[in-house]
Image (tube, rainbow, N blue to C red; front, side, top):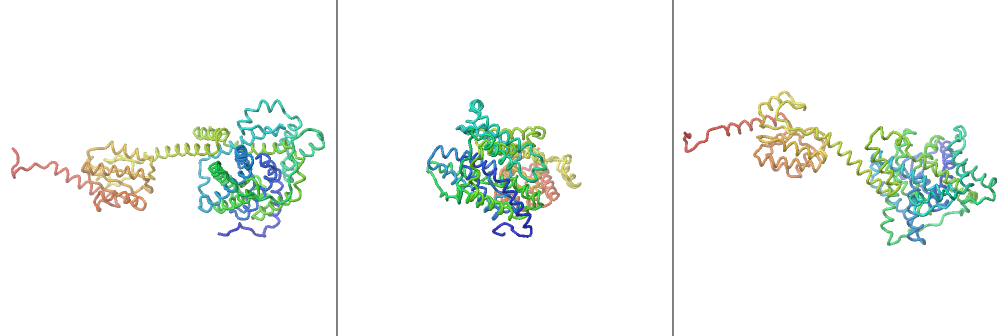
Length: 565
């Protein structure tokens, strides 16, 4: 596997044009997310440059554009808020350290080849989680959109302060915010081909604020320092160490999910296949460098990626071009952004929050599945009002429990105890004849499909319902997987049958199933010639053994060579 991403110059014009267009799209979003996070607009720019460059260089998705995203910004906002509140002097430096930790976690996820497992969660959980993040981003933009400072307490603080915010609206700021949304929503599609609506809204909103309201009291970005960033050395607080590690893991995991979902979209547009583990390593390197430079964390961005591909990009050269262009803005043009109104950036971020909401699934979730709908709304509520980790953990746990229950019900129907030829499993003519000859004294215990732990109760229930037999044939021919719990239950079935004097025959235990039962010591309890590969042969021996027992039980009892009178 190559260390760097697939970079070539066969599509130079398309890659450069894609990079330039993606940079234009990224600029207003980077500024908006920087302000929204509390780390400042320059942090958004540094994040866009660092994550974008190194993820493109070392990642596994050639056309992916990486930058600060809505979900990552929401989490970073909470991290900055909590750490600066607990440690005002070093809180921001600690927040950037969390970004570095997130990058390290992502590198570890990629190195241990966990990429294919990252997005292996139910869609109802992903939908509720992403929609919850969208709701958080919308709520957090209300105060700046109305021209006021964000209340303390995050989402709950903003919700509680809504009456006060609405009663103290800054009319000019609100007009600028509304103008921003109007441009983004109503800009004709023909014009969008030439300029992204976010950039048009940023320029128009700024010009209107400067020339139409020159003397109005409008919160603005202010001067952004130009030049290369100051290196942020890792800063830890002993009291916050555990919290920082948890936040780093959460931020890294969210970045993985956000990136790999976007990589799948890129695959569908380019008809290619990304390397998920390599992509996670690239994202980790990007976030590690971004934290060192005082930048926001980033991930694969759907909007930038789609624009990049649609304008002709085919290699990672487009992502590198975009990062270089944004770096030039940071070095020489950052001073031009000082008059941008905060309300305009809030409008841009608010539109991102609206786009993050999974409208497609929200509209029809109740039609698809009521259980899925409850999980989605439960995860959404927990994400907004409790905690992101709790939301995902609870959602995945409940969804998996419900899935296991359904699978267990389906698999339980394949557990059959057969003592005659009337059951609905495929039996040969000889098998049916042998079962008839057994006269109910020979039991065929048939299992099929993967035996997960939820099936163990069905096995115990079926076995307990059967009694008074001479031979038990345990058919595992159609079992590809045998879980530990089911293996132990089968061991109990065999022990119980042996205690009752039954002959045990095991059929078709091969491969992993054979090794599992062998390690449990099951095969030590029965004769070696009772392990067979043919069900017919096992039934033949079982019927013969049962007939011998019946003959012995019916023969007269001898006493001293004389029959009793």
